[in-house]
Image 1: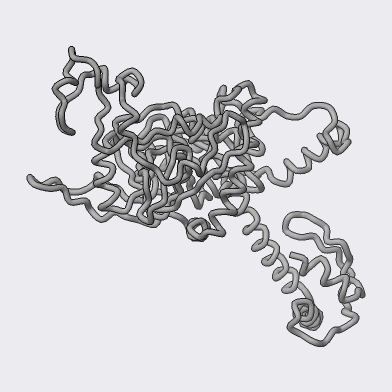
Image 2 (image 1 turned 45 degrees about the vertical axis):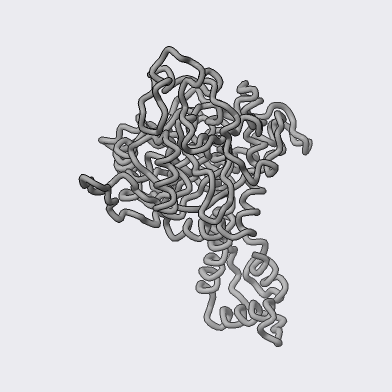
Length: 457
């Protein structure tokens, strides 16, 4: 994708390790060859953003791009999407920016994406959302916090009767098996803290990348004083103007003037006397520095629909009935096409006082959390891959040698009290599935030489 989005600039000259530019370039080239996919079918993970500001933040969280010199992979006939390809950790990902917001645009884009990237197994919907101020267990959700979906609820899909609306049961667990475990772990205190700490460090790096790319303080924490939650029944309208329709607005159903729909709280005179009390304002530090911010993470049910919700009372009614912690607009169009995990930063409280001031920071916290999640996923996949590679290696041995090797492995794990000092193998150089040479030849070698490279994982 050709974009003016800020991307981290490459280092010039020598790095802190003393490597020369040519040596660094050689190492970089070798890493590229190791990770770069051969074709589109090797991409397993898609990242979907609905807004340019979400895409910009997500690009800053990439570790490397594969399309700096043009798109090397192309698209299938009939696919109108434009893609950005690269890697996060050792996971190759394809990023798409939707042409429009909403579930219809999302469904169309994902259907086209599957024409080109036939190996996709999981989509990550990354960006911003409206947050419910308090979870079902009483935890405060604040602006800039990150929401990870446990389930997705299409809250506006159902039947309208004269006296009521009955939602069709569309709640779904929309993650693949690989990512469902991460969502579950993020609900535990230990898992959530680990992910939060990793995301906080990556947020600092993203902010540094943005500063180095000429974005200045675009992704800086706006400050605790700017995190304002008004009481649900306090209308966003002119409070001191006697000459507009707002003066006749005395309840939640009365109309307000057109200007009030787009004006800020300061322009309308919304009073701080009607701010809702919060239990966790001291959880976040009020700072204008580029770093030091904790990324708080919440896991729960996310409402997806075609409506931009700007009503505190409706927000509370829906969240209490459905157990919702956030509202967004694209996931309902994705889950039928591919397993989908929502990772979105809270940029407003889905009420009439909604504004755009927190959008960039919320997009940055979501992008940093996505990077942290994929890094953790990479570590899990690496361990699984190397365990599978060990099994493949053992299967390739002569049955007698394989049995002796298994004895050695069991001994290394404390499950076998006997140790066979020598194992005879054929003189073969071992190369694993990644093309790496194991540090020995399969001749007559000691048990230590066998076990050291095999069981260290």
